[in-house]
Length: 517
Ligand code: HXC
Image 1: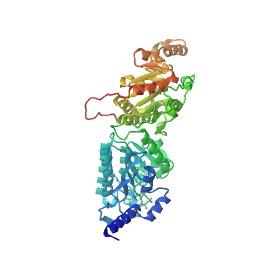
Image 2: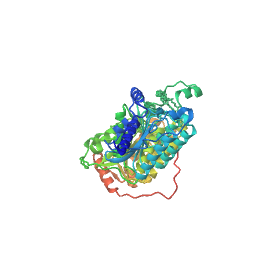
Image 3: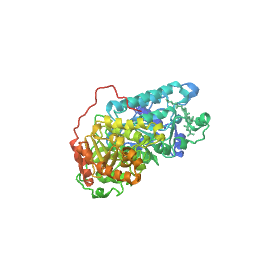
Image 4: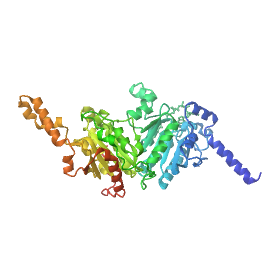
């Protein structure tokens, strides 16, 4: 064999060794835990044959605690570039088979390298987490490695989409990288995220809690809102990430891919003319409205299990990607509260950062009253949603379906927040507050002295409803651009988006605003 061929053979052998990560036994153990390896995950995620790996031969440099004997080619993370549906992405997957995927200085350098490449080349960054956290043997160098990653997460925010998949442990300060990214996905039963694990919790607070109840997928998808998506399996999770990518652009200078649309834009949806219950206080399902108007009835929901009183997600109109924000009358009457505001604000900001128009479907009775909300800063969180809408310069189309009262009317993409097109169904009730509350204030004195205050107030309530519970007062002032037939909603949105395709709007020059948080 020639010298050159020998060298090539050596390369092939080294590559094979690197591909085994922590070795066959460790891979077997990883499978026994119900998890795939880093390379298997990347294979499932990207287009076949498209993955180009970098730093496959990189080694850690620690000599503490006998670490020099624990060397594996590539050191605990597989990183590189690839395509998904033909579009460039950068990806890293922590390799739990190598020292529990713990983060060394070297691993951080590998991760930072692909993050820098993603930024320079305007491509999404996909981060697959499965790690025991900072490599304990490396001490401060591992911690500094996290700092380097976090800084890049921050700088990349709003420039390229960043998506985190949590397919195993993600504990301690390590959770801050996913938290800084745009979307987080967790697998059910095999992943968890928490700042301090069950043992520390027990020591510090005395509370008994297991890992699942402290930071499993169900907790973060329903209670904390930390995760946007959950999946039963890693395969399902990867399919969700691919679908999400199909709705978003590769960077903030591009628009989302447009797909061919076979659904007529002027499709009349007669069912919408009769979708509202007779009693305006009765609920109906906003999902039915969404799927009636979007291309082929498709809707990709973001945070489906958290703050169900507001719905957020992606859909298409005439093939163009939009973000939908909708109140859900079927969950707590669609009221706005702390969690709904947080959820809505974050979604609106993502859409605005990445040139995705926002379509808002409004049926909101107001903000949830009470100490529970006030003590948890509903003022600030409501202001967050307000700020997000008011700051957004992407095309904004708002449809008022039914209730639209008080502060919640203003917050949900009203005209004064520079919304481009504001339409109302004839059933819209746009007023400063609900009839009951309004007459109780307006006629408090008269009611006190009236011989039959109940029927007096009921009569006044009817008067108020007649006067204000309609869209025409708002239309009279130009706060509503048009009152439309519900069945025509899809067409008006499609036509509106076409009109707004070249919209240009900017914000006053500033370093950044001080968003209420
Ligand atoms: C070095 C680690 C490690 C770590 C795991 N390993 N975590 N090595 N540093 N942080 C090693 C284990 O020693 C073991 O090595 C291998 O990875 C697999 O781990 P197991 O314990 O056998 O796996 P499992 O039973 O599945 O348990 C997984 C685990 C557990 C729950 C993650 O390993 C664990 O509790 N690890 C420590 C977690 C932790 O406290 N991390 C530090 C957090 S502080 P061998 O050689 O035996 O196969 C932190 C600060 C970040 O991260 C701050 C950022 C700002």
